[in-house]
Image (cartoon, rainbow, N blue to C red; front, side, top):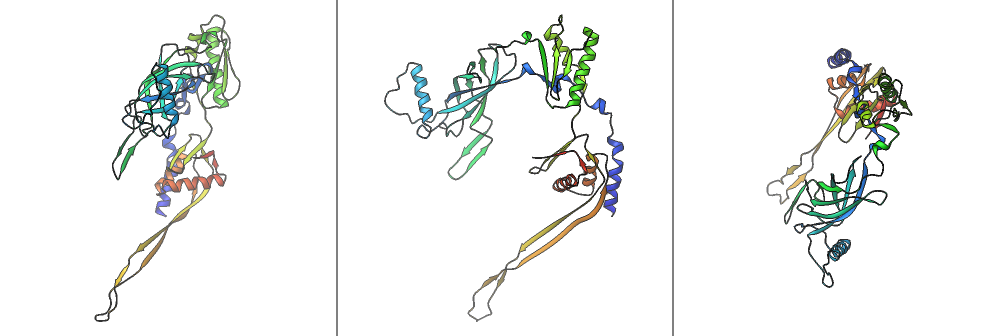
Amino acid sequence: MKRLRQFLAVLFALPSLIIADPAAAMQSRIKDIASLQSGRDNQLIGYGLIVGLQGTGDGLRSSPFTEQSMRAMLQNLGISTQGGQSAAKNTAAVMVTANLPPFASPGSRIDVTVSSLGDATSLRGGTLIMTSLSGADGQIYAVAQGSVIVSGFQAQGAAATVTEGVTTAGRVPGGAIIERELPSRFKDSVNLVLQLRNPDFSTSIRIADTVNAWASSRFGGPIAEAKDSQEVTLNKPKMADLTRLMADIENLNVQTDTPAKVVINERTGTIVIGADVRVSPVAVSYGTLTVQVSENPQVIQPEPFSNGETAIQDQTDITATKSGGRVAVLEGPDLKTLVAGLNNIGVKPDGIIAILQGIKSAGALQAELVLQ
């Protein structure tokens, strides 16, 4: 009963300590909560070869496409590959991927990621040779080449192997040069579309209201309209420069809003609680059953001069202990207070997860429960 009283005391005492001004705590710039639709990334992909590996590349018999690619590359360089078959394992076939940033111009560099396609054991120390990177439209937008950086390592002996990280994937920082710019230009746009990273109707309306309040004092009228929970359209004023307009708008502060949500990862015991989660009055009882099994075999010796044999007699001790089981009436203004109270009476994360799932099933958790 003493621990139960402590829990209830903490449960009702904590709200006065955690109350803060929500408007001040949730102000964010528009650039942090929304992105420009015409300013999105584009994915690039290519197929290439990594050379210079220390015997950790593809086996040419088990990965015939590596040998075919190597022969084709040498022929393009004017080197005859007729006759003979190479057994070297210093080459690996890889897929090369990259993200083409918005408004990227020819000549700028981007990072690329390489991933092994064959049976190579490590890409450490290799060099990616010239590889073209194409977009979804089939056009070549960048060319990649450079030394591969691998963060993992592998050490192998006759009877043991130690591996840390992934040795069959790596990065080439700044390894790709952009050769073609995207067809559309930012200043050719008539309207701008802002896409919320976390769709929410309240936040979408607040963005439009904030932009219109600023535009009314700057241009004499509103320019923003909230289309739905994710999109806000901006109409360009006739005399405005589009780049300066976007620079001013993205620095406006907006009070954001998010739905009440609880995210639980049962594998790691992680609990993430939203600020607006509420808990209705509910009675909770949690008890754990611990079973301990101990094996203490006994050696039995025969009597003297009995011509008997020494035997082992099994002896198993099983102890069952049950803890908890108290019933506590919980009524907290938010879930953070509930979790603090549960921690105070000694409930571990796995117990808290079970209690939260039970509270949700009882209909007392006023939030979305997401299980990962």
